[in-house]
Image 1 (spheres, each protein chain N blue to C red):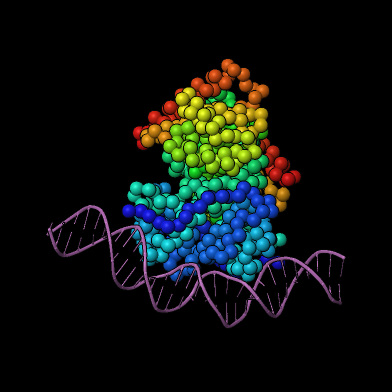
Image 2: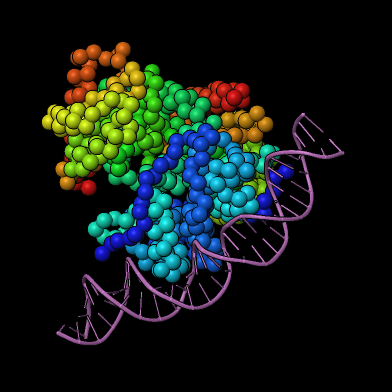
Length: 270
Length: 270
DNA sequence: CCATATGTTCCGCTGAGCGGAACGCTGTCG
DNA sequence: CGACAGCGTTCCGCTCAGCGGAACATATGG
């Protein structure tokens, strides 16, 4: 019954383009353009001048001006009073917050994540697999935090993180995803398809994954099994190598495994 | 010299309309309609059928169909495979998360909020004043949480919360805001303009506010002074009345006051 | 002072979006 | 079983929202 043409391409939030354009949306319809402008603004972190936006999205200044008027009317954008620069408001955040609050996995996992943090005294995180990337849903950072590269709401290529490997190890299309990932992001990491698949197999067998995405911090992750046997999500504990020894790592592995099982059980019977 | 016509009306996220329509956006341009549909979907919490959306938003089914196609292509919406229902994706959340992470006040306040929670052992929250409403930016909930009505990302009429009063007490247009609020939401609360203004005056003098928005839980809040002397934000501590006595409340007041001063100092010299 | 870049307004043109109508499908009721 | 109702989807002619070039006003600054 369903169906829909629309090619549903990559999300591609282009994390903070600094001066890179988020996408030349010229040639599309008004709706696409409006979102292009809003996204550019949302990624910017600072108020932008009209012409900067126009340049980035590749549209006429007059067009951008009108669009910004619409977006302002809708409450997604505001002008800084003195400078006249444009800036995204928090309305987007409000909307998004309403979404995440209702997310079933994140909902039940929250409490367990807190427990996990308390017993290990390290950073605990929850992530899901979306396409070839891992999306961080929640994170409880340790008092003395390690220099993490990820934050809640950010994306990372799946094979690079422990959580990503954990979920990939249960995915039926792991092979094709791994292939593409090795070809693209794995290029400079020196990853081989064979090696990756072997590792995923190991992960699947032992039930947890280990990885070091940010330099100097290692993460241990276990998949949260959905009722379909695939990995619905992954929980992980990350700690700087200095604070880690064989014994502590073993303990963390154990905690992560039991916690993931508990979450899976609660998610299973929703 | 900025400028811009656009009336910038209420945000009005219409928290979970259940079956109320988020807005009859018919008669507007494509951009406004697209956002209307997306908002409706984002507030829904469950996947919706095409015709339900069309009814709520007051548009032709064919129109909604095309719009949903666009939104799907952009990655903001997806179809549930089996049922064909439509649902908002987490892209909105990702975008919003990028915004909030960079929010200056929330950034510096986060650590202090955690301290505040640790020393008081109760729920600590950070809110800002937007128009006549208070918007909750952050919250650290106590282990045994009280039955809160608010969540991060939600809005509440300003006079009803401790944080709102704290910020209002420093606002130059407190009078006009209070007037409108008393007329609307204060109607059933039995608030009088005179009483509210008197209370705000008291709050301004003593530097903190007390309120009980959710039944059975009282909150103590202090404004975080911006460099312009107005309240840039407010921090608050909430606790169920059972856990509260005069001595503990006094301690909380003290903690909240010192914390707000510390944050203000750090925010001031950014 | 002119030169440059910006934000803003104006206006004729055009195609993206519009919505009525029709089609295929799936249930449901008589 | 056929009639019916509601749904998602597709088609198509119409039209107005959006388009962008051009002109204008207003800073910056050399």
